[in-house]
Length: 226
Image (cartoon, rainbow, N blue to C red; front, side):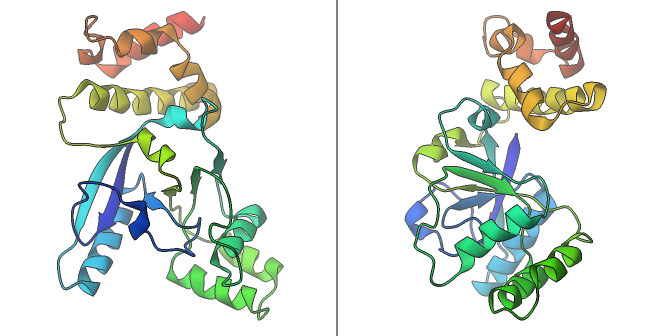
């Protein structure tokens, strides 16, 4: 998956010590799969630093979600569990770090939501009221890499001809198609793809399978899954 980070400058090397605590998912390095969202972040942070801001692209190896090496927490929507976790990380009396996950994925608490979280923490609105307001929110996305070990699954995208980039692009398209064609959830789609013989061939430079159109590779995968 290609993901994006918006900041005041291009990122050449990730330094977790520069991360700010008490964010939605705690202290860590944040990216999103939505480029416009990263561009908004870049513009805002750039303005704070008297510059235009910049978006850096990374390749995220999604097998991190399923291979069992990392402690992962994922939220697919705004709900009570998401609210409780964000509240835990944002409370001033919470320890730092407030959790021991390596990677956390889920929706974003934007400015208006953040304001209401503060009101909720102070007891000015109920949890039920807060959750009812969240049901009207537009889709957002963020992944927080909370530990140095988790950063091994994130690679700076610096060469569009690199095989890892090609495989990542193909993987994203195929997993989306699996979800559409077979009504799989994201986790099952990723599990099927990354455990297949097709992905092994795809990653082998000698086969040059990665140079083919992704639809042909998808047909090979479907044949394998029969």
